Amino acid sequence: MSLLKNIIGGGYAGGPETEQNFCEYTEIFGKKPALISCDMNFAEMLPNYGFSCCLKLQMDVYIQDSLPTLISESEASYIAMVRSAVSEHIGGRFVGQGIIGSSGTAFLMFYIPERSAASSKKMLSEVFMGSFRHVEMDVLSDPEGNQYYKYLYPNELQIKKSNNARILKQLRTYGDDGSTPRPVKFYLTFPSKTAAMTFYSESMAKGFVYRDLHEEDPPEGMVLPRHKLTIEKTIPFNIDLLEMVDNYLIKLSTKHGGEYRSLETNIVD
Image 1 (tube, rainbow, N blue to C red):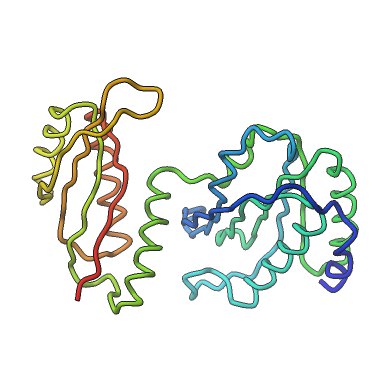
Image 2 (image 1 turned 180 degrees about the vertical axis):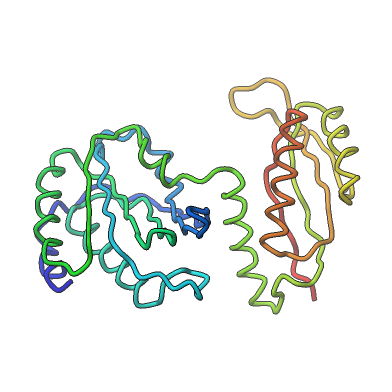
């Protein structure tokens, strides 16, 4: 990697810096987990004709089945160094990565200006030619972000699982490891009070308790107001358990024309 470090400084640096917001989630490929990280804010920039080309690097990584993160700290550092060096040199935007346990590979995805696509691919080919790891790369025109959506962008359940993991990380700083039952509030919106209460009637069978229902202003571009329902359930803040709860609420709210928005929990002394 020393050669990769040495090339930094003469590339296509520049371009407006925009805030990034990474969502991390897990999928299963080949009966093994794949860890995905996606810059959610890049979706708001699409279509993007400034960074119209997708650059995708795929490399070998050493997987350790005993680790929940699939790779050791040194492997994670290696990937981070490659990501940082490539991003700085080509002047593009890093939008996410995946570590696939079933194949022992990792991929990094960037979006770069069309003017730098050919030279970036040539330069990186020369850099990785002498690497002891097998590296493949591809550059293609993709201003609509099709590759980004296909390989990185999470579905609704994965987004909620990522948010739950962030909350649990905060709870652990207060001594809650997710094993103790705690009150958790769930927020949903519906087109009418009738739809909201019909939803709630069904959710009672799963132990949800009514907390509030009030009218909200209509979303932008719409005329009719929405009705926000708050329900509560006392459960451990366990990621796998919450995934099942989230999946249930997504499906049931969709059935009644509503939307499951979010959950929250307070610190319990």
